[in-house]
Amino acid sequence: MRKEALDEIGRLVASDPRVVFIGSDLGAGVMADAMEQFPDRVLMEGIAEQHLVGMASAMALEGFIPYVHTIGTFLTRRALEQVIIDAALHKLPVRLIASGGGMVYAPLGPTHQAIDDLALMRAVDGMAVLSPIDPREMEETMTALADWPGPAYVRLGKGGEPVVTEPGFSIGPLRHLAAGTDLLVLTTGAVGHEALSATTEVNESGYSVSLVHIPTISPLDENSVLELIAHHPKTIVIEEHMPRGGLWTAIVESAMRHRVRCDLHQASLPPGYAQRYGSQMDHWRDCGLSKDRLVSRFKELVGGPSHG
Image 1 (cartoon, rainbow, N blue to C red):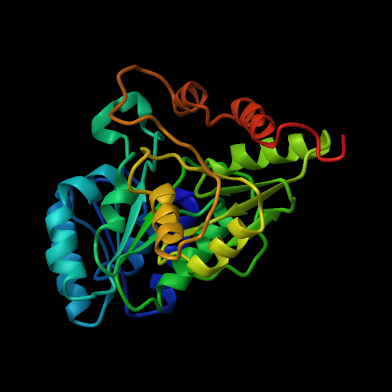
Image 2: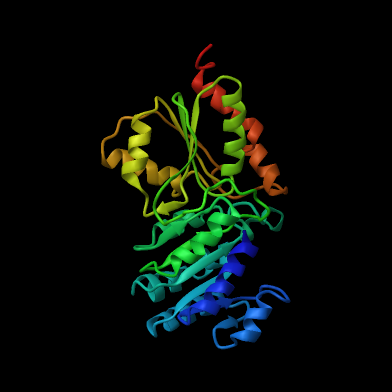
């Protein structure tokens, strides 16, 4: 997804004089063509994330639309004060584009594992929080943000994900990927591919499972989510995030606020920070987010084939 996001930002810089790209130490050659063509609007500022966000906020005050890109944990944890005070307090159109969402950088340890980023950004007043599922949706997200009125945070996946969405993304609406009656699966981001594979497998074996991808975690389309929950006997929320503060919390808050009675279940990363070494998929398997583990979980929740 990172390549598609940066390519689309490059196209936006070329077509819209308001758009600015600000990166940290992203590696040799990243955005090189755009930097050569637009040296005043494609900027590499080094490993100084707090400075990146402050600089972007200052440029937004002058009418620019800055896209800031670096590793997710550094954008959210290290620069949180600047995100809140410099960007969000003034409702500025600063776009925080975060690499390494969830456990993408798992082998680098807890400093690089963005497992609390959705919680941190959801807590920032006025911040749009987005987690696209595939390259097409990521490209369309970058374009949609050019006219979004306030700050936004976008979590990028590892890259190489297959395209599973249809064209036509906009900030807010849900994306329906499979229809069923016995179980509702709500997910966000790249782990949605595991959920989709699991849903396809169980439906082919006689179950009836709905899968809905939620790219916009904040502002959440509460009415649509709660209507779906009300029309399914059980719902499971799947996310590559710690159990608190992310999509699960947003949905539980909505259900309680609107007094919707529901049978909710959760599949997420464990609480706390990783204590073992391993790849992103290793961690998914360990905590039940891999396809095979989700297949078993779905069957357990449904209790048997819908027409058996």
